[in-house]
Length: 271
Ligand code: MN
Image (cartoon, rainbow, N blue to C red; front, side, top):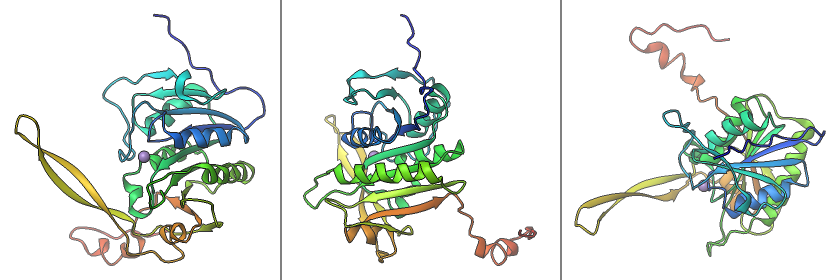
């Protein structure tokens, strides 16, 4: 079979926007995002072929990956490729095969990515992979209404505004923007910090048709920290939440007292 090489970003001076997600290439969230961003620059979509939610920043290194053009995903004139891998794989392949974009944009995820969710979010991991390439990166997620409805219109419109701004002004190094949208129209947008939003795992045991046990990891959302200055608080109040996020996880305040006091550990000077 003849191989079909990917078509890289064009050579015009339009800004190049790489769009990924973790819900898969057929998700309505990535479609809404890509179509809105087409007004801002040249968009190419690279997304997993099946849902990859909660895979975090996994990278596929022990098997080959395929990168396939996908005309049937409903993106109109926007080129779209699907990858049989993780969200981070999509960004790695996208940058190498299509050329370096001006920005990496992930989403719009079906469901929130707030607080501790960031440790397992594939949506945010795609943006983190953008940071690994030194590129400005943003992640977008949509919270449902109480009835479980997802409307991506208001969020997609705000995403286009925000990405246009980031393309004009840039972002500080190694910093991404993690954005969550409330259901319905936006009252506005707030700069926030991460809350303690998380899923408390529970384990369900069922039996397969042959009577053998299998297990299903489920979770209940827990969030005690919902202050106005948090991502969760902003979304609950009807605002888009915009959190600047870095991968700096060091507990710097404990370096002297905790790490410095461990057996055999010598405290090093901190810059
Ligand atoms: Mn997802």
